Image 1: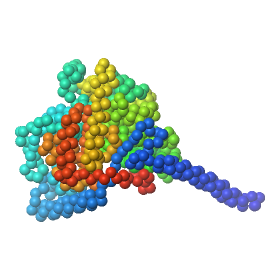
Image 2 (image 1 turned 45 degrees about the vertical axis):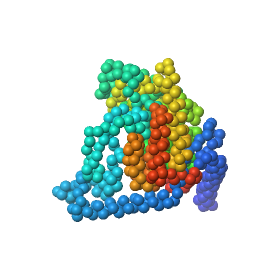
Image 3 (image 1 turned 60 degrees about the vertical axis):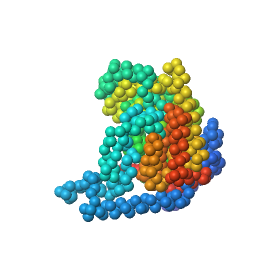
Image 4 (image 1 turned 30 degrees about the horizontal axis):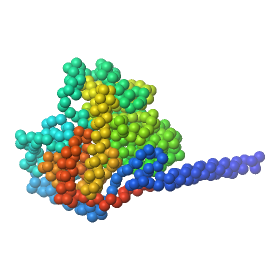
Length: 560
């Protein structure tokens, strides 16, 4: 009896030891499997992109490293700008220089400040100096060309005044107008004008009350048919399509795995959901699989219970990088680890794929492999709003649980008709092949524009088939010089810098359209060639990307 009692702790220790040993063996097996898969994924094609059996066509992306001196001069430029910013702030404190920005009133100095003054340091000392390159007012349809209202400043960009002059026929290389449906053709827009007369400008009610019209149902059925899924749900605002629907899909006890370059709407939706968020490196499948494996093996923090859901958030085309999601690999990992996939096709729907049906068609995949298909109507269809598509059970759930569906005003009927008109054109339901010709023309323009920039020696990012073309400028002083000199040549461009991009990767972002003629593109390319020599922007040495394939850094995590 005593002997048996004394043996119990030893038996328990032995049992625990065996369980720990089994667990270690399982972990070791997982690691061996992971290493084997890594060795397979290491057999890369150009620029570190796999062209294995998952891909039915070459998949080429470019992320060329700039020469070292460029990074040095970029940091020097920001350092000099920061030093002069501190000097200006000192002069303002001494009353020697006026600051037009809003400041706290003297009688409120003891209150909790509405904003921290240092948070506006970048705005008042760096951004203001080149603010004339953003928010330029136009007075025409943002088609392949637009008219720009001229403005000047008398106080170094703190305020602007209009001169009354209009700059005509500026080539538009900055607007999301992939298929060229931002147009003023009266014949093409006749049905939109008719619906404006029939329904008015809006219904001022939610879909759950008096805002559900036959036009919305027609549009949802058409979107589902276009995507090849069971059902779809449309919303009046693209940003809210992400930010208000993700919280309806996941919550506490769920895990979101989000690409580090996802759009703000996806980031906001993830944060509002209350789910745990972990970030994986951009388009890096090893980083994603590491997070998936850890999530399955270890479960939730502290309790180690299994996650209720694991949701992967990715975009079809990333609007700052011009890269395309490696969808076949993401779907393979999603199936392997029993996760869910949310695909944002805001920039890819209409823009890629043989018939414009987005990255799912681009990779020749089944739409049912993606659990939640999301997209917007602003980029390719010349309208506004967004959609969620997938299984009918999911759409019925969102109709009663999504904040955008329950509380938001429904889509304006004329906008719905514009989307229907454009989508029918792309699908060929209007009895013509004009839509398919637009899709094919966009691909030709994209390939031509990218190839010419490569030949000239510019560093550009992204996939060869992406109509978003980032051209790297790097040095902050060249951002303003580039945009201003392009406008002098009657070319409108979008320039982007820190903090919207990494500090060493300031860029100009071109958006190619099917409506651009070869003459327009050649005009832009000739101007870029000339300006590239003048500003010394041709940094390309055709070197391989410096971005590592596997990241060991601790994952960023948000928890309440």
